[in-house]
Length: 294
Image 1 (cartoon, helix red, strand yellow):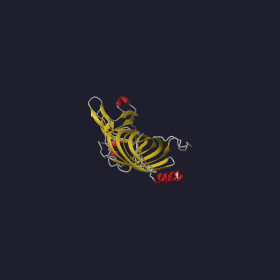
Image 2: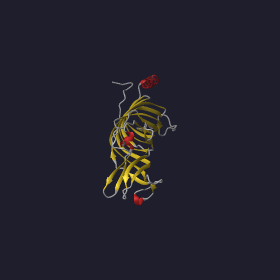
Image 3: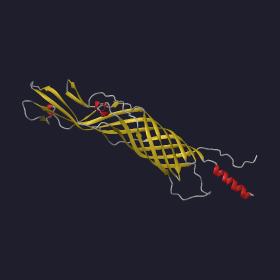
Image 4: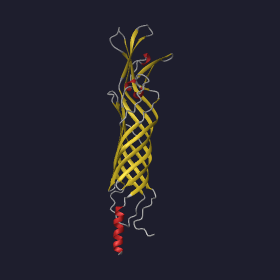
């Protein structure tokens, strides 16, 4: 009789769905880049760490996650050369053209974003897969750039250029830096996918005497790709400009690509590839009784 009861209890238990609720804490870090459709602007290396807290539901092998996260991103770009030709008159009243050129330009952008990931997937034999979308709202952005400036003079009356003469303001390879400009990314939607496994995946311990852990740890690789254009398409001017001063003559300045007319009509899509570590803390739960005595 007791054998029959035990078999009945085991069979009924197998029919009950395995449902677990978790609070998760996770951290991500990855290689970050701002892809764009401007041929002259080449995306450079960057980094994007983030931390988040979420709610997980595991229903048999099915997983659903809703979270909120904060992400800091550092992006760089290699920007194209730019030049200006300015008609001038020297101290002896001779006209000439001043050629100003910038090269080896680099710019950088710092940003902070709030993200809401909504992901679904499955777990099987301690391996898991999640996919879905991250909805992002930019909270802060700063961008700046630097380039090497060279200037030379071109006189009609002379064949050669006047260059590398600092006392005449003809200089070679002088570092110039832009001011720091505030910017905002537009709201974003990133497609997200991750694949990984539970830490301790190769443990062979099994059986009823093995302690059931209420905390699970996971390590995964992930990729994020922004499907929306996040660039505001606002420009403050050309990549290279100048202004007249009373004491120092012409002063040249550069603008970062994100806020210059180089990318005024650009499409920008963020891409991040990296690793993710997650800790799941199981919430208390009550299970329905299989055979209840009233």
